[in-house]
Image: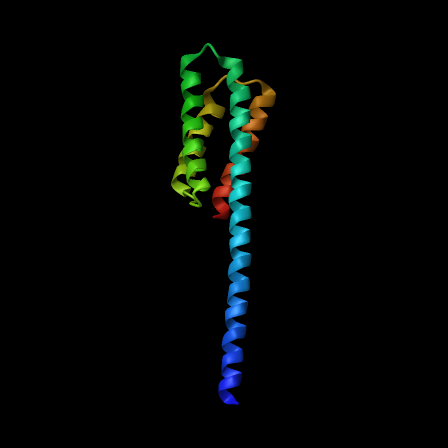
Length: 125
């Protein structure tokens, strides 16, 4: 009878561990999906803001740099890897855009909000 109780416990633990692991994977997947949604929104805001300063090469270069860093971060996310270093690089590049580029007020507000969201995303990891 003792071995029967032992095997029931083992099965119970296995089921509990499996359920918790599955829940963890679901949360992990949702977290990556949310992160990718934020990156997509930032990319769209950057494209909209870049249309305003199409003639200034240095400003276009800043947009390209942040877009590249965000794409690298997103590429890793799509593989299931949250690369904090790549996110930090994207945040630094976005700070340069907000600080140095000529922006319409609504674009500056949107990008400042995006910067805050990216920092929050980084700090949650």
